[in-house]
Image (cartoon, rainbow, N blue to C red):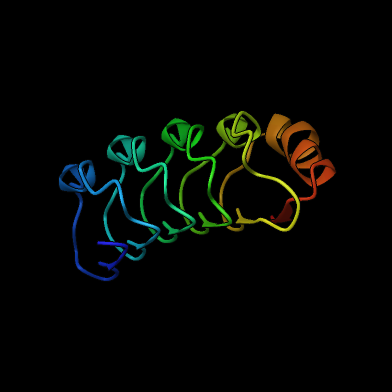
Amino acid sequence: LEELNLYRSNISDISFLAGLTNLQWLHIHDNNISDISALAGLVNLERLYLNTNNISDISALAGLTNLETLNLRYNNISDISALVNNAGLAGGDTVDLRDNPLSAESINNYIPQLEARGVIVYS
């Protein structure tokens, strides 16, 4: 399985995704998800849509180095240090962080660091 669309499915538990290591595109936006730790091993993900959920901790995304498109809009994220720690996020990749309560550290330090690597950041 390389692409999975579960948007607007009223799900909150995504632990069943942990074994789907061949996934390249995952659309799980518009749900009730708060815990995304099950995504940590999905290292082949290129496009990940997590917008409009209840996510605050994105540390599971630090090792997803193949990400090219990441949509985190409309969540409860303040700390985006995991994205800076993701060495794969680079030139031409896009990250959408709009409509999140981003911390001053994220706005003033982390976003400029990502942009300096060529990441297109919407905030």
